[in-house]
Structure formats: C-alpha cells, structure tokens
Amino acid sequence: MNFTDVGFEEVWIDLRSTEMPVWFWVPVGIAGVAGAVCLNALA
Image (cartoon, rainbow, N blue to C red; front, top):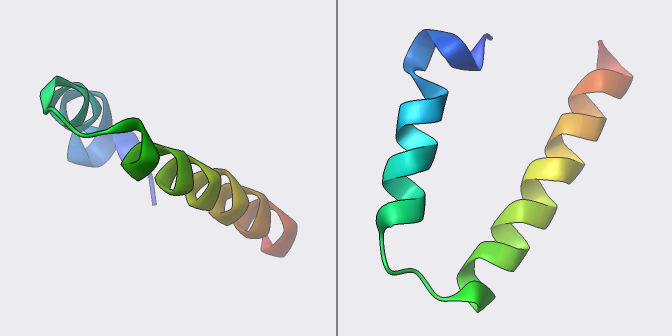
C-alpha cells in the first residue's frame, strides 16, 4: 500500500494540527516505526 495514495501528508498535517498531548503521540510513533520495520522484514 502506498501512503501517498491516501494523501498521507495531508492526513499527517491534519493530525499534527489537532491539540493532541505528547503522551498520545509517543506510543503512536513507536507503533508506527515498529509496524514499518515489521512490514519491511516481511516484504
């Protein structure tokens, strides 16, 4: 799946513009990195 197909950058900007606390984004970021590593390992 290509993130650019779903306008990933626009979604990311929208998410960053929301007033989410840091404690919410830290686990999300860790999970995102871990998921990317797992996908690369399986690819």
